[in-house]
Amino acid sequence: MSFPRGFIWGVSTSAYQIEGAAAVDGRAPSIWDVFCRQPGRIANGDTGDVACDHYHRYREDVALMNRLGVQAYRFSVSWSRVLPSGTEAPNEAGLAFYDRLVDAVLQAGIEPWLCLYHWDLPQALQERGGWTNRDVAGWFADYAQLIAARLGDRVKRFATFNEPCVFTLFGYAFGLHPPASHDPAALHAAIHHINLAHGAAVDALRARRPAAEIGGVHTIQPCRPSSPAPQDQAAAETIDLFWNHAFPDPQMLGVYPERLRTLVEPYFRDGDLERIRRKVDWLGVNHYSPIYAKGVWGAALGFGFGESPPEMPRTPIGWPIDPGAFRDTLLMANERYELPIYVTENGLGALEKPDDVGRIPDAVRIDYLGKYVEAMREAVDRGADVRGYFAWSLLDNFEWQAGYAQRFGLVYVDYATQRRIPKASADWYAGFIRSERSKVP
Ligand code: FCB
Picture 1 (cartoon, rainbow, N blue to C red):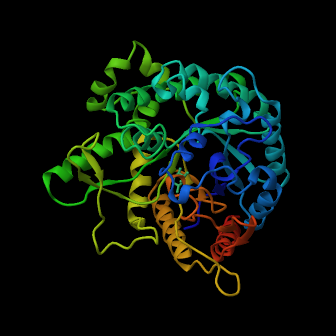
Picture 2: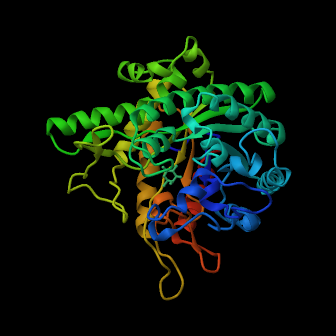
């Protein structure tokens, strides 16, 4: 079957991963700028200082989107570029960049999808407690209102947070992302305050732009034990709770699962669930791989990531490949949350370099994407209300603690020269979009 009429094909990126221009035009540091400077945090000591220099090269990048034939572009705003201290005085030069970007995207006939938060909290707010301070909900709502006021005349689709479970677990339990703590109490406080910030931002966006379509972006992946051992089974249940339920359930169903309710209790005030569960218009699902959990004695939450079964194929950076898990995730999310779904990220990471003639013949990415879009088609055939798909990512970019070594782009970036080289998968995706669109009358 073909995808439904109006199905949107897009690409995703995020601010810190591509923009660079870290200290240009009044941008202040985010927690990632500070974290990258701490020795040993990021592979090869990489930083997002320059990244893909998208801040200066966005026109070229919009032209690449055009070449792909995408209908939508999901990007995020750097909070500390538009509000250097996190609150109060806006930075006009930073806002003007997003004006230029949105205008260029629209001029190319592409719809901008704006995500408010893709992990780059202003450092100034971290110094006031960051996500562990309940006031953050108000700071985030004020930021949302600023963006809605400035860009909401042209941007119609907004997301609040990207993958809140990842930046909380990695930031407060595993020590892999800023603020790099191993503190369950901080994790629980952050979870609840981020949920409150989501609700407050939905209200702020809605108040300023009643016609906007607002959603949250969640990574949803089946969590499986890495062995039948009881500690691995228990680990899978715990990770499922934090990964798949800590945010989507309160935000869209108005409940915390029982175990989590107890953990967030110290930070909970009367009326909080109503503050969190605000009407949203769509659910963003990011999906890459199933998770294999293992019990880890002494870890902050008693679990970690284990190995996938040896017979399961893996991507070049070792992530399990299981398109059936994607199909099942979409069917589950459709049934559980009863909202239109947009797949806001899916893609494959590899360690690539151009061949002798300067091409990147990334057959493994083409194979992965082909299988995953077919799995999505199966979910749609079985009734899942999936309305769009955004490949991660337009460009190779700063892949968090892995730095620039891991490449997820449809377009290769030569960081020494900033030259962009579309990979074979870029041509594949362009052809795929053309062919799918031609099937819909
Ligand atoms: C997701 C992130 C995105 C990118 C991909 C590979 O978890 O949202 O920024 O790092 O993984």
